Length: 598
Image 1: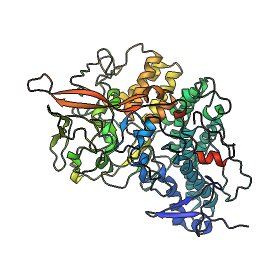
Image 2 (image 1 turned 45 degrees about the vertical axis):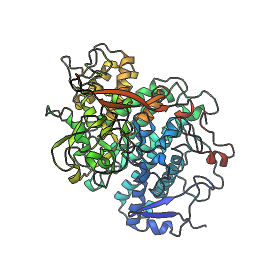
Image 3 (image 1 turned 120 degrees about the vertical axis):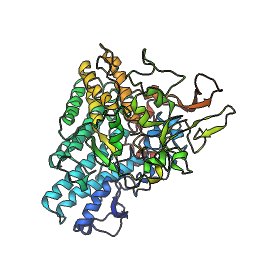
Image 4 (image 1 turned 90 degrees about the vertical axis):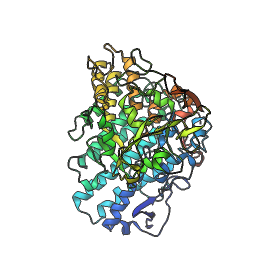
């Protein structure tokens, strides 16, 4: 019998296994370290599993190039040198690599997410190796059961990432053989994949601890609650228009891979509602709410991201090890004192999505929005998410507040942190998830980033209820998020939502709520696709705003003009899915069906 061997790469004390197909994604990379050696040592066994966690933060990491590749170094493309959010209309990247994608000029050989195919399968294969070999490790039986369940969770997690990018993909089961002489290289249907991943989450949840019993040292590892939350996300996606009745293509050859149901099935929304409710019923998770200080309405939204690594809302988190990583990447130069480009500059598109303190959208009647003074009386989450002209922040070296200048004078000279290469491309900086109440120079942060948090399950439940025609019940769920946000409940206690709101009107509000609640967390790319609205929101213009100083004596000190920063082109049906790498399609000898439009 041939000895099984595989690659093991040590990075920062973490071991990594890599494997892919003969000439493709399942081919073993050979290094002289045997499975017996690895799994006969408890430390190497733990490190092997730890490495599988390495890429779980790709959607939310502020610099995904550091965790995007097989060794953590990423594929080396400028498309990866910023946050995932910059592949949407929500933000401009400090780099320009994303522009080819956003303008519709990416190809099946140059798409920024091509690396996901091989990376996710390497992780899946590593999980399979762990599940097969961990029973032989010198670890206690109870601990092994939990670790194997973690590997099962991670395998399902990476399959779910593949589904979000590609639609139906190839399911490889528990196979760990290095040979695969009879392996058939083709995709499973989207429905088969969703059902499989949901079942895997259910199995993993049985053996995983709850967040209540999870030891502090293990924070960031999989829990039973994380299984339920990820399953809820999976089923909300499967129930959404792109996969439920409005497929991107009706071509019979590709349809099974891109739709759960070709015709609309309301029962999918009920399954999604039930999955979300299962998360909401868990006792270990609650929204972080703090509306006790009138000077900081919705302060819980800020505290959730800044009061240490663990809180009651994060269900599955990605731990960061470096101090003030987000602040360094996102803050204006006048605060950070760092002369390098800033990342994830918010667009005017997302700024306009933030409503008003009374809960109304800026274009609603009675909102109180004033385009001459556009940053006044906005949704409190706006002030915790966006740095705008004349915003105040704690200064770089003292606790004194300083005003951020992002404008041009009467002679069009940039003032302060105004629009300029390497500063901001849009007239805004990101403040989301950052600690801006401590001087930057002395700031130390112990933080994690939310891969999934309770607010998503609440909004998912509201969305599913509304799609099922239970609109008023959905309003109650949506207002849990608005209450935490610090929005005024109004005299009617409806947080700006009109009495008698229709299903269609509430759908618009819910979708906008996703956008502002999760700005910077990597949701908008996926949401606009599952709703099949990307051809509207991701087309047209990614806008910047220029502030200009008005002459002395003017009613308002600044005037603001929106301009086109980048012309967005969303090509349907192609851009609803990522193309399977052309090299993989060619190797499959016609068995691997390409996504529509590619």
